[in-house]
Image (cartoon, one colour):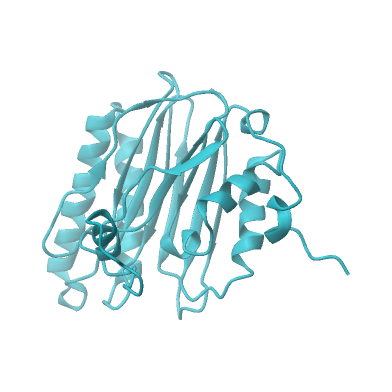
Length: 258
């Protein structure tokens, strides 16, 4: 199964970049993840790096690769982060979001895990959809049918290392199809793009790195107050499954004439 990917991270207007992204790909498996250190509390960057490094290390050391083993690896990340909080009182509340995509290349299966408001998107048959639900107050209000305009989207009720401690969310197993594409990203990235724009960008390119670069063009036209990171992942040949774009579709991605 052919897999190609491309990654991007930038600081935005923050004093430091507390995002961490990572990928591990071999002949049998793949993992793509982003972590976003929770702002307002000391050690967000430490938490993000610890979770990223711990998860990738756990996966590389294990012969088993399954939804159960990846769940155990994420749980181990939580335990490791909790121990680090206890060791250093200055970072006793450090926490991070997580979005991780797991792919079994031999069985051609995918699943994902997330905590907080970092997201996974899945493209198939001409449509891109968000397949994770944010662990945020804004999302809770939306799902309950209440108006959430003006609610700070950064108010999270779950993140790795946060109190009270809650487990990450895990998806069902999804059989992969040739032409599938995924986007794994932090909130600084998706807040500056709509799902329609992600779809439109995909219809205009022939390579994975072009898709991410084109989305970045659109993101760069917004004021980027937050760190932003993204990993784009292509399975097989997504460009053969996309639709031709229209002139209206391209408006945000192409420079104006004149």
